[in-house]
Image 1: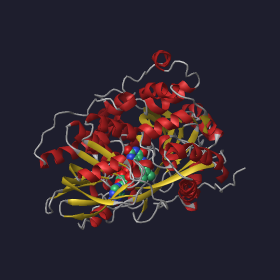
Image 2: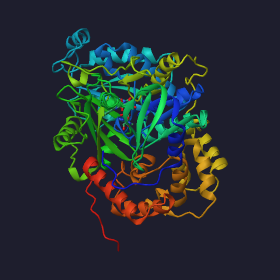
Image 3: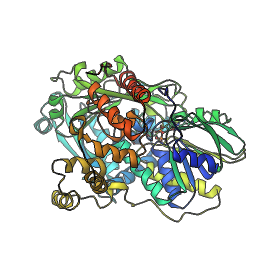
Image 4: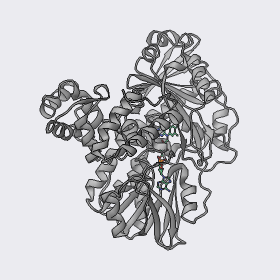
Length: 570
Ligand SMILES: Cc1cc2nc3c(=O)[nH]c(=O)nc-3n(C[C@H](O)[C@H](O)[C@H](O)COP(=O)(O)OP(=O)(O)OC[C@H]3O[C@@H](n4cnc5c(N)ncnc54)[C@H](O)[C@@H]3O)c2cc1C
């Protein structure tokens, strides 16, 4: 993590927590799973403090392939429980978070009829793997049929279909003409993971005002009996909080956090995965709005996927040390170009078309001789009751299953504090997904009624906030407003984010409250413009303003493959 070089006054929320010095449950790590657990406990009326050493959803949760998926390929690992739960959760999220989770038509290009039939069941029996055999049409058909069966009750997405070569190429003319078939089915795409996480978090805070508190840029650094030592990375102050239960939801860093708390665990064995984002209209057009999900020549399942007018390409799966900062390497970029060429041989791609890249570590369980791509994606919960307060560690957990996982983890915690569940999160709308208009007509009416006068901005606000856009627009209208970042943002909207969305740093806005970086719009001018606009809102002096610019530039250049140079004011 790029360290801050400044220190700021203590934030009011941090002061309140420091002065109180206690909570019932302390959750360490605000990735989607810590956040989901936080919301669930808040809904039960339990006092809960969530601390995150970076910004909310800035760890593994910011590095995903943006898929809410049943995980068809986990079937060959024999992970039927996980696939069933994932499909159910996918169907659920399409209903409760329709503002960010949308059906995604997915096509698998297939080059053979029978390959992989022997190796896949063998892998399922042994849970080990060498290089897998190519998955042929027969195997994919079996998988998709099971997948459809799991989907049956939800009925949220259509069943799969198989096409021969000719019809496949009629639908997707740029595909490699050597394919034999395509299989097309539906999963779901998560358009704004970081904003979805924020929505879940906000729902948690609102469910138990004053009792459910979430702090970003606060790190758990040590433990002293029932007290956990926290460090506020903004002000630099350290203080302790006593909790009846401590939940370690620090994703790939779970063992490192346990170590800081004085408990030696060997739960984790994370793998690194990277993605590139391309501004490539021809490739975008070639996907015809679908995710192309396929097996590359090394047996890895990879994807090419249209998102926000760009093309997302990923991913790799390489054993990783969580103490090191994951970055997308030149070799990984070569691998991505190779995989694009594998399915779209006529389309050229160059490095200049990459507008952004990102890399993260999957919080997977420790795996000995299992190849990275075949390590279980299921999660488990470990409870250590030896210390002054029980320490509950989460091992694993995908984005897709966050709601169910939060419920399971919260049930364990409720058991430890002698409370029972009063509210379920199943079927409960998330944030701006509440009353979200689903048809074109409903959308038009909703905009007329809730965003009067928003004009061209209406669609953008609805996409960014879901139905929370109504409150944002009301706020924007109450003051002078001017466009920022080429019109993607405005001064009043930024002020809304600072007042309501716990923005602490420039990078929070560029990377997580908006998609400015993801879509390739974070250049030197935009950074400077946003730093200028944030300075009065966050009481930054010139030194802090300049430090923010410097850190954000370094972060974007070193971790996201950009080449932003500092520019002198003109
Ligand atoms: C390349 C890649 C692709 C993926 N694609 C998908 C996908 O398409 N669909 C899907 O469902 N899943 C996907 N996943 C998996 C999914 O993103 C993760 O499993 C999930 O986001 C994990 O969330 P988490 O909350 O458990 O961990 P994290 O998001 O990593 O959260 C843990 C948090 O703990 C914080 N932390 C660590 N130590 C401390 C401390 N001492 N004090 C305070 N805070 C601390 C970290 O800063 C971090 O924010 C993908 C993952 C990767 C890496």
